[in-house]
Image (tube, rainbow, N blue to C red; front, side):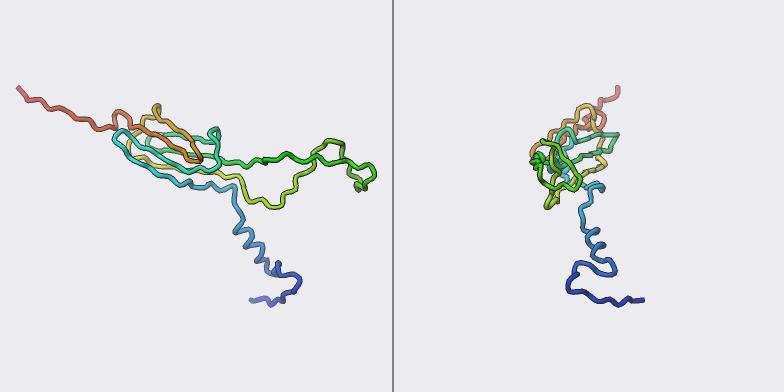
Length: 166
């Protein structure tokens, strides 16, 4: 059943069906969902090299592990305020509506626009060969994680010599 409705010229931002809320919720940034970082995986003669984009992530917030042939990458980017809260001046004659502030107490932050959010990155990759987990090296530089994954000794092909039988 369709429900007829009229639009008020003063309230264009609200619909009686609540569609404005549906669309704003749908397009709102989601911090709880893990994002898949873009990766490149290169195969060399001695192992694999992974590059993963992790913008804004610090080294301490990266968790990297290898379990058999599974590489697990997890990282968290948190936003931090670059400015300290302002100290509100106390005016003894001002009407505070029953709210008192002591001198030097930080005033609440007043965000005008906040689009940056905490992001969780997670990626699981099946590796084509066994990796020597003890020799894995990783470094984070300018938002790109570089991971060197050397093959395990038993996974590296080797030449087997054949001798003649007597």
